[in-house]
Image (cartoon, rainbow, N blue to C red; front, side, top):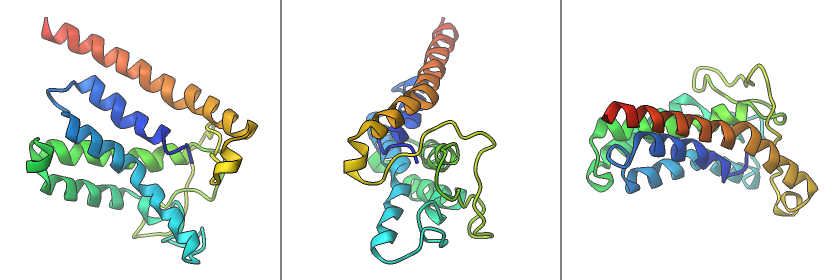
Length: 176
């Protein structure tokens, strides 16, 4: 998995690209939380749930079904988020779904349960250039942790910044 910090890159880039008029601060914060939320499944290890189990790491919480559930809950919170339900739904769906997609591009683990609840089969992307993040803090604060961050900068943050730049230019020309 990419680091928890990198999962915030997608909602940040989307929000900046769309602008504050479309994605106000509260919705952005909800999107960042939604993008990180699937990794709460690491608590399954403490409960004795095996990694490959549907409720283990990268199981149901990394599926589109989970992303749509998070988005539906967010759509019910429109008064708090101060946006129309449809906008909250789609932004939170994209933010949450991005987590599993990014994890599918990592070079470790057992894959992502994209088809849950219909199947527990795990999948990876056809290419896997992102170095998988260590789960322990001590391993993260090592040379390996730095190499993980370098791969995330190259394969997640820089593409997000490029898309942000492109969307900013397009928005500028659309407003003129």
